[in-house]
Image 1 (cartoon, rainbow, N blue to C red):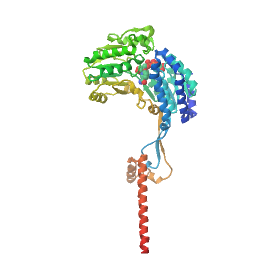
Image 2: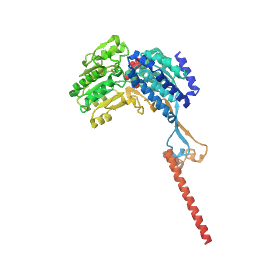
Image 3: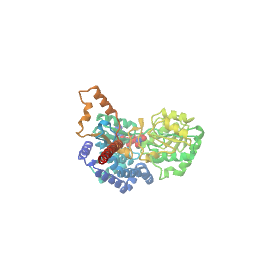
Amino acid sequence: MVKDSVDLARRAFNTGLSKVLQYRVQHLRALLQLITERQADIIAALQLDLHKSEFDTSLFELIGLENEIKLALRELSDWMRPEPVRKNLLTLMDDVYIKSEPLGVVLIIGAWNYPWALTLGPLIGAIAAGNAAIVKPSELSKNSASLLKELLPQYLDKEMYQVVTGGIPETQELLKQRFDHIFYTGSSTVGKLVMEAAAQHLTPVTLELGGKSPCYIDQNCDIAVACRRITWGKFANCGQTCIAPDYILCHPSIQNSVIEEIRQTLLEFYKEDPKTSPDYGRIINQNHFDRVLALMEGCSVAVGGDSDKSQCYIAPTVLKDVSPHARIMQEEIFGPVLPIVAVSDISEAIQFINEREKPLALYVFSSDKKVIKRMLNQTTSGGVVVNDVIMHYTVNSLPFGGVGKSGMGRYHGKHSFDQLSHKRACLVKSLAMESLNKPRYPPLTASRLRQARFFLLSRCCSCKHLLCIWAITASVLALGLLIALLVNLFKVDHQFT
Ligand code: NAD
């Protein structure tokens, strides 16, 4: 069954249809139509899956997709254009360029926390780059998964782009098949299994993983503004966002103000009882509910802390004076719990971050340029944002992806197109000017090697250079011609005098 789908997608890809610009444009438009016309259904599915509000569905899932599609529609013909590159003297007269080609059949495995953005986002890249694709949405967001399976064939080529639903067995079956690229979003644990399976076929992978994204609040900063932004990014989607700030690092002297500002902001955002707020989400299922509550054990609750298993509800919670050795600091929280860990200064914060896995995102709040510069220069992460959280995700000229344990590869905007394309090296020569090739042919002599060295080490010619050389040559020739003409004129003049 799974194998049949992959075979069908491969046959569709082999027709060559998906390579055609018009076909890609037509399917990108169709995808835009899907998310526009069926927005109400998508909102209803996400309401059931995650208690996601209409507003959050637009803000966190659909606007980003719309933006990605419109960008691809505007720029695709440019992205597809062969890219001329610099030449050496031996290839001066040849066409040398990079051609972006589709990879083939791409497997897209999505996670449940943003079931539309994390499946259709990579699919936009796959279509733009001219690939066929199999989309495997997460079984945990089951309403979104079945809606996607129902809708996609209504809008896109049923053979070229398919949805396979199901749980772990179906994903494992998919992973046995041969793909040309696997684009996986989810946990690092499953990421390793995906990479292991991909290795059997030497299939390249993009792994969009997670981890603990730190957030440093400097003493020298507007704490009210910082906490407002952090509260928004942490508690949106009930904390189930891969780039949500996972924990706060700050000096003990500002911990109480941070707690107070977050408390006030939570009141403003979700009122007295977040459980009744239409804007506050739910944990995806009871397993994750138990997991998040277990992480909090032994910690001191400063804000929130209530929960209701029957509704998978955990209140927005802040934990204070958390030890770096606490259980909650050992794994990604992926829930609405925000621990605060005390550090004495920026140096200790940097050391704390660098002693752990490279994060997907890193946040620093400060008004001090030196602090910001140190944080940027002395740490690493997939992305970094100064004085805000999450917003780098919305800039589709920025590559989105992790580093180290938080993932490999990148996407969004043109980065998705590049990630899912093969960059083919093209050198197109004519059969003329064979004498230029002499230095590389046997019998090799010292003088031929010298010539070869000269030609091969020269790196002169981009298009601009070539134009310059032509312009200079043409000018020299023109000047020569002019001089010859003048000389002749002078001679003729002389003969008559
Ligand atoms: P999940 O449980 O939905 O798993 C993701 C996918 O992997 C699903 O399609 C599922 O079917 C498949 N899967 C699960 N177990 C498997 C197994 N044993 N073998 C084969 N396939 C399997 O999602 P999750 O892993 O709970 O996602 C949460 C994680 O994803 C967090 O760590 C989060 O940070 C990360 N995440 C990262 C990004 C990003 O863009 N970097 C985005 C969202 C989530």
